[in-house]
Amino acid sequence: MTEPSRPPRTPPTPEEVDAIRTARTSGESVRSIAARFNKHRSTIWRYTKDI
Image (cartoon, rainbow, N blue to C red; front, top):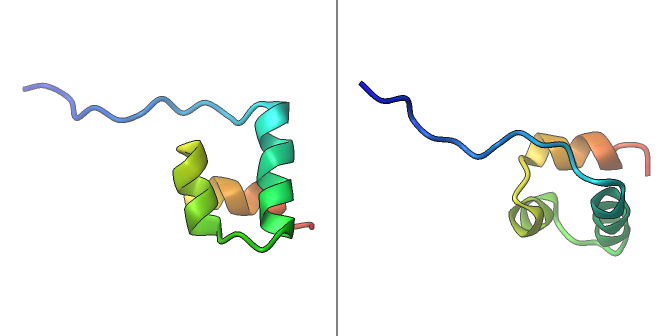
């Protein structure tokens, strides 16, 4: 039986973190940011919770 495939779990680059924080500060939703950067919503929350 083959394993289900899933995207690699790579942390966001420093440039992506800056863009994620900028988008969140601008009022973009966590869900849309996660979709745009192909990251999980909890990852977006982790990097934006202290803004």
